[in-house]
Image (cartoon, rainbow over all chains, first blue to last red):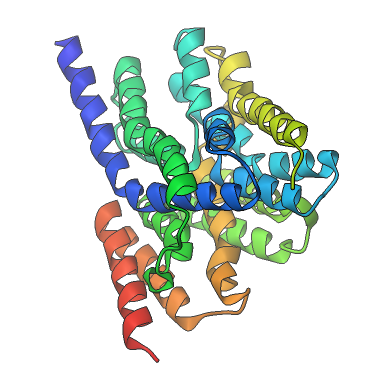
Length: 236
Length: 108
């Protein structure tokens, strides 16, 4: 019985992850192409995608390496791009914190944007899921997202040619995230959080190291929490 | 040409830092209870980080050199509205992609 429910959670996660192939494959290819252009070998590009496993930070790092930026600037900029991952980690903790340490480490390694967004949406929509089902769903989403990321990176270093610009692939990331934000707007507090986050991010877009994102994110979380408190008081 | 050592230092340094950021709360807090006010803020993490991440990309897309693009903006808004109304992620992606791709082929 237990095995059946975790198996079905895994496959539901897998099906949730499949549409992201539309983003993961082109961007993995693109990273392979960019890394090759920067003079990296297929093995080095693959090591990048396996060890770092964070698209935006990888592109940032390779761009800065190519611009001959000092090592400290390369690392600081790419790490700043990834600061949001700490927020994902905190947000997953109430759901997956009871897992054994090695499974939490595994979750942490695979905690990329698309996996996080899919998992949190599932956990909020199905609060009755058990810990084992939540972990199975997580690994289900990981399978069609993270494994193709490695393969596509290597393929990009081999094929190395451009993708037709008419497909508008530069916009695949915004479109897939927007598609997940819609269903996340469940209450008025969620809507206010999103509006405040957008306003903060746009107002502070001039900050270096992509820190406007952090300002917007924190503004959104505080606004959401405040709106939730207000609506509870209104009910009480 | 980028020196080998710089490539490997970046891979290892950035890999360690990225894992550290993803592990920090899951690993250190684990199953210990967090105060209610912290949990209340965490409930809005996704709905705050993701819009903040993409808002600048929607208004000033990198493909147009940072210039506002009515087609990309329309596709973005259609995706958001379909996602909000249908609660269906795939339908919403397809709506946005259909507008973007058809617009790129049909518009001059």
